[in-house]
Length: 84
Image (cartoon, rainbow, N blue to C red; front, side, top):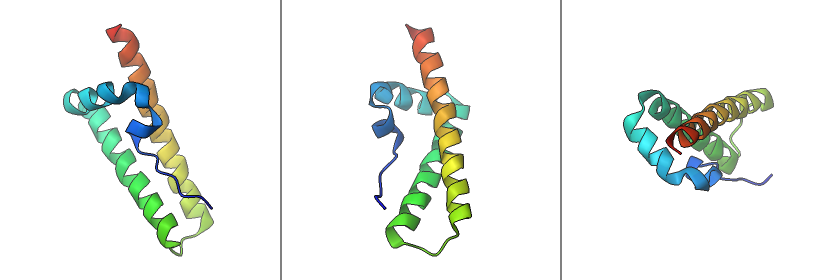
């Protein structure tokens, strides 16, 4: 299985500056960003170490990460359209 980094700046390079701006100015975005980053690091660590974790648990973690990423993306699109 390939291990890939899902860091938000790499996932959405077109929003790099907006990500940094919102992390400093929007508390909800900052909290979701932190949750996403921590969960992504945890998943990546488990995959790198091939740690014993049930497939269901890992799947749940990845689903949560995907939901957070989707929420963050929606905020980025909304803010970028509002700023334009």
